[in-house]
Length: 281
Image 1 (tube, helix red, strand yellow):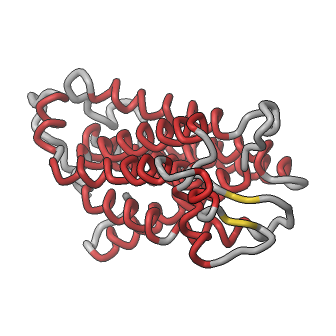
Image 2 (cartoon, helix red, strand yellow):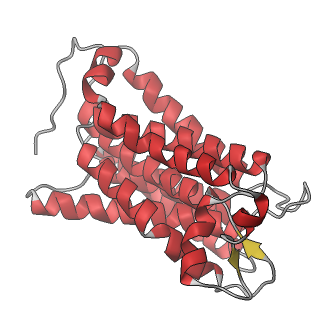
């Protein structure tokens, strides 16, 4: 199967300017606008939107994902969302997969708030849940798929599924040690073995000498940035001591967002490829 590679003389800046749409910028910026608007509400009003584990409701299951306790909480989630979404968007539009971005974007914002809140009830606990960190982590989960598509389009690497699977499992091994109470070591071991398998397959089938083409400057650096950002956001979302600064970090919902974000986007792109008569990402 041939792989479409853009004109070799097109600069990174020109390709990005050609790919970005003002409508896309409005869509991406709508989420920070909603988060800031809800934070501007009086504290008592915001408190009515949080998800109580003792008294859960369908409405608060959704609204809790868009309200924050304080400015630091809001700032951290805004930063994570903006970095993850902007990078995933850039990778996918430069890969010619804008439709995949919107499918992932719509699914995460429309379905994930309810799903994440309901799955939070699987672990009995007291207190409340609020914040967009689970949604932000879902977009972090999209990054491996986006990078695979980007490498396929811009570098001619056929092994996009291996790239996506390798990154996801490497991230899963890294986060499992903190995010899965009681079962983290086995999950980390399985994820590590899977990542090694993907790495071997990737080297054999996708990154052998001469297997890829080098585009102009900027494309490689953007791909490298996406990997560094991916690792950095995972490390920030899964601190060694989730209760170290007073407020307890909900690593469980971070884990759910990350895993579901990857799985939903990965399966979506496989379905799209099948419908188009192609294979892989």
